[in-house]
Amino acid sequence: MKKIVVYSVLFACLLVGAQGYGDFLSPPTIIQSMQDHYPSPDSRQFEGIPSLAVTAPGRLWVTWYAGKTPAEDSNNYVVVAGSEDDGATWKELFVVDPDGEGPVRTFDPELWVDPDERLWLFWAQQDDRARFCSVSGVWAMVTENPDESKPRWTSPRRLTDGIMMCKPTVLSDGRWLLPVSTWRTTDQSAKIFALLNQGQTISFVGSVNIPPQEREFDEHMIVERKDGSLWMWVRTNYGIGESFSTDKGCSWSDLRPSPVKHPSSRFFIRRLHSGNLLLVKNGPLYERTGRSHMMAFLSKDDGQTWTGGLLLDERKWVSYPDGQQDSDGTIYITYDYSRTKEKEILLARFTEQDILEGTLVSKRGKLGILVNKKPDSNK
Image 1: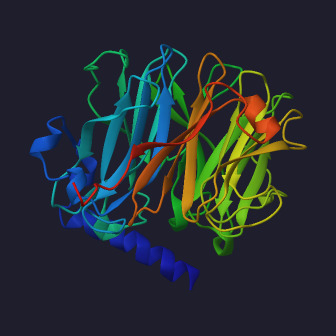
Image 2 (image 1 turned 90 degrees about the vertical axis):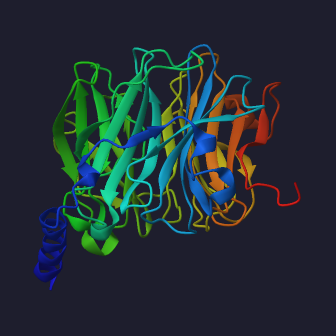
């Protein structure tokens, strides 16, 4: 039965190519004139899956994907917005859309500031008629001047097959590792690629196999521990799985359930400037809740124990945290709420001390900052 399923998926992928549906391999359109194009906020029925980056001078960038139907389908396109006043006001800057009304979608975007302070925008692109094919592709474009009013971006380029929706990790040896997944369709689906030569070339490093009965959307993240080993956290259908590598990502231990409980949804783990680990997840550490009670925790011992517990948002249907710490130590986390009804993209701003105290004690701390919300029908 397993072989039949695999062959069916491969046949569907080959059929897409045979029928000439190759637009998913072509660079998408970057739409600068937002008001002249159909993906206006008024037309959106779906908005969610955000990512955030903050540049050295403090400009905030947030991206997410949207659609004119209340579904994740061929209508999806990527929206990019910016803020120059620490999140008080936001302006949508451009849309990434492959073919308008056609079957190709862009989704799962990710923002990342590299060690050279360039801003990267990643996204996935696929023909929706062959969803879950490994021929889905990771695309990227880069700007060297993200703090200018109109940054100049490189042309979009396809990096590899698969989907990447979590931030790259920079290792102590200088390598940039990308967590790329082929999701449900293949074994060894949680893959690691290295971006080399300041992102000019990409090379496969290694992968982790998620057993088919536990495989969901992977959405894996990587932390380099203080002993030099790598620790991968993976989304599974039971919550979070973990795997370890002692050879810089070439080989990995068998996946096992993490003691940290979580729904089958994206989480966020990241090394902070202090050396502590930040974890943002739904619910208490060792309790599996639904997509509610977005909380932040700290670890001072490389993840052996966790402390604190700052509640960012207690509502049901809050999910998919992503973020970055700025140069002065402030932590920014974006997440979504109610993707097809309220359609909110939100921002939380806090510090390590806020996490440890379990409440906002810092002057800059603020929760529930709106980046995007459904249009007010009364206006």
